[in-house]
Amino acid sequence: MLRRDPNYTRLPGGGRTLTGNASYWLARDHLLLVDVQTACERYRRFDLRDIRCLTLVATRLGWIDRGILGGASLLFLAWLLGALTFGKLSFPLANGDWIGLIALAGAALSSLTGLLLSIRAGRMCRVEIQTGVQTIPLPGLNRWRKAEQFLVTLTSAVQAAQADLRPVTEAVATPAFTADPEPESPADPEPSS
Amino acid sequence: MAATAVSCPKCRAPLPDDPAALAALDRCPACGTRVKICLFPAFTAGPRSGALPEAVLAEGEAACFYHAGNKAVVPCDQCGRFLCALCDLELAGRHVCPVCLESGAKRGQVELLEHSRARPDLVVWNLLLLPLIACGYAFPLTALIALIYTLVKWNTKPSLVDNTRARLAWAIPVALLELAGGVALWLFYLRMVR
Ligand SMILES: [Zn+2]
Ligand SMILES: [Zn+2]
Ligand SMILES: [Zn+2]
Image (cartoon, rainbow over all chains, first blue to last red; front, side, top):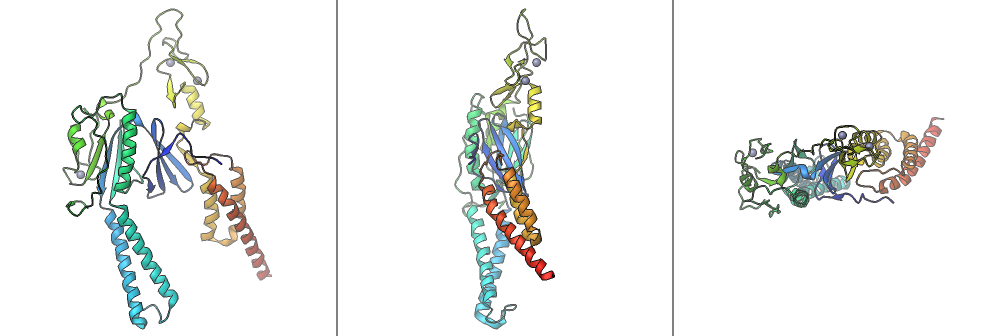
C-alpha cells in the first residue's frame, strides 16, 4: 500500500469550496494548497520565507445557511405537527399515509441536524495570504475556529522559516498568533455579524 | 516599511501602514468587521534579492558553463556542469541548472513544479457513479472501462499528498458488481424485445 507522502503534513482547516475541495499541506520550506476539482487536483505553493501576512476576516455568510436551514426546519416541524394533530387536514398527505409522514419526519430531522451542525461549526470567515508579489484568498477556510487552528500551525512554521529576519517591529517583537476564545459571545456586540 | 499595503479583505479599505498598529488591530477601522492579522518578519524585510555572480579573477578559477566570465560556485546535481550564482537554481535542497530544470519539468519529473494532476481514483469513481444518474444500460461498458483503468493505473501515485490506494481498491468490487448487473439488465432487455 502506498502511504501519505512523508514530506507533507496536513494542516487543520480546508474543506469544501464552490467548485470542489481544498486542503492544506506543510512541507519543509513551503505551504501547499491542493484544490481537487472533479477528477483533477491543482497545486499552489507558497514559499514559507515569502509569506508576509495572513488576514482573517469575519463574514456574514453563516446567517444565510442558518436562515435557510432554520426556516426549513420550522416549516417541516409545523407541517409534521399539523399532520399528526389534524390528520385529514394535512394536505397533501392523505389520512394514514405513513410513508409520507416518515419522509416528512426525515426532512425535519435532517434540516434540524444541518442547522445544529452549522451553529456548532461557528461563525464564517475568509482568509487571505500576502506574499511578496500577490495577495490571494485561501479557499476552503470558511469557519473562524478552524481557520484559527490553521493559522496557529502555519504561523509557527513561518516564524521558524523566517527566524533569521528581523522581527516585524522590535516593539511588538513578532506577536505570536494565539487562538481567541470563540468570538460569538452575546456580550460582544457585533456590528458585522 | 512594507512595500505592499494591507487592505481589509471585506471593504478593501487600506489598513494602517504601521506594523505595530496593524498587528494589534482587531476590527477594520472602515467597516468595523472583526479582523485578525498576523505579520511575519518578511513583511518589513522587503523583497528578497538573489545572489549576484562574481567575475572570474584569477587564472585557473572555474567558470560557469553558461557564463564564461562568471565564477562557478556549485555543480549541477543533474548534469554536473559548473554553475555561477545566477544559473544555480535551488530546488528542494538540490542545485540544478536552468536546462535540467526545464527538461525535468517538461517530462513531469519535478514534483515541485507540477501544478495539476489527474486523479485516477476519482476518474474511476466518476465512471462508476455517473451511469447511475444517466442510464443503467451503459453499465457494462463504463464498468469495464473503469476496471481496466483501475488495473492500468494501479501503480501510479494517485495524488501528490494523499497516496492511499483505498479508493482504487474499493472501485474493483463495485465495478464487478456493475458489470454483472449491467449484463443481466441487457439480457433481460433483449429477452423482452424478442
Ligand atoms: Zn473593512
Ligand atoms: Zn544541469
Ligand atoms: Zn552562469
